Length: 234
Ligand code: FES
Image 1: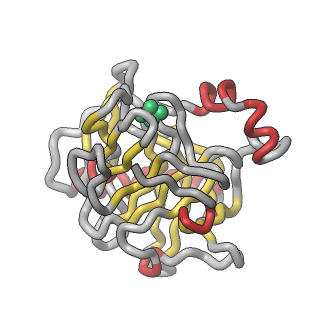
Image 2: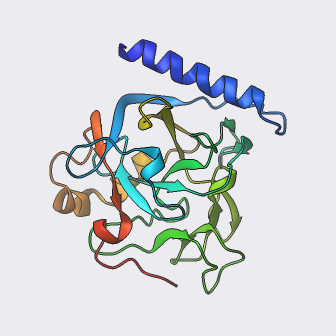
């Protein structure tokens, strides 16, 4: 399948899923931003099977740029479509999770407040199966910096803290026959320009000269505990 056909099939699938689900009216004027598709693979280059993901575990891959981290989560429960909006009031229709249970979601792991993100050395942001110390409930993505909390079952909408918008969603296509996952677009408030401006020097040391290269072909998925030496719990 060429790239254009792939994107059209993904967009069609998302539209069908959204239309078929019982959900609020999904009016949105912000559209997905398509990037080169990247199949999710493990460290050996083998495709990640959706059914092999641990439920409620933090996985990280990088997309759409080599330096921009993404959380991949199997929530173990359906994540249904949501109507959301960015801080500049652009409405968008998040299509919900993928897979038979619609439980698998992906979001940019860059906090929408001050752009905290997981690095190989430390991570102050992650999904918490159990309530964080300053948390409002279980099963939220929690940023320890100023305690913004996002609900990954609702398009990463903000439930508490200073974040002005949901985490930017990364759209996934699930090949039900092969049980594989492919990232192909973002949806919502991208913060990549701000991210690269803020961390230009740091990223050049962490990732090197390819930090702003777009990912294509494959993206390696790792558990957060294997990707990062110090996942902070707060
Ligand atoms: S950077 Fe995440 S809450 Fe401030």
